[in-house]
Image 1 (cartoon, rainbow, N blue to C red):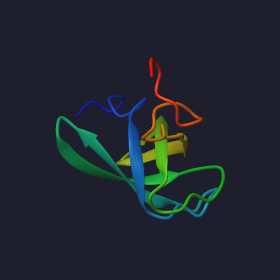
Image 2 (image 1 turned 180 degrees about the vertical axis):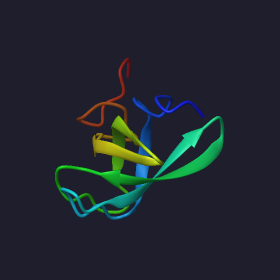
Image 3 (image 1 turned 45 degrees about the horizontal axis):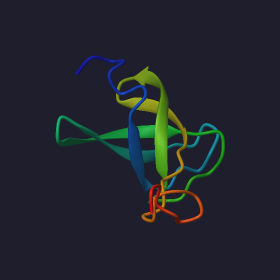
Image 4 (image 1 turned 45 degrees about the vertical axis):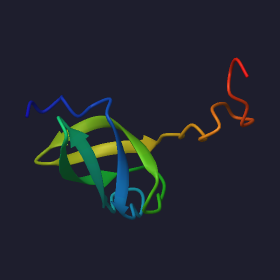
Length: 83
């Protein structure tokens, strides 16, 4: 996989990221296959948090930031457009 192909992907924290230079682990799906990376973030992120990859450090290490998920109801207030 090309080194920059994970930048811009959304993944999930599987082992909590402790923040700063203390990594955790994220799972990214690429072409239907799960890939696991050491992940760094500015602040601590709990397991289960969705994240956006913002930088690839190489050697299966990435920088991430929290990425909001859309509620199952559609919009932020739970109202589905066009209802």
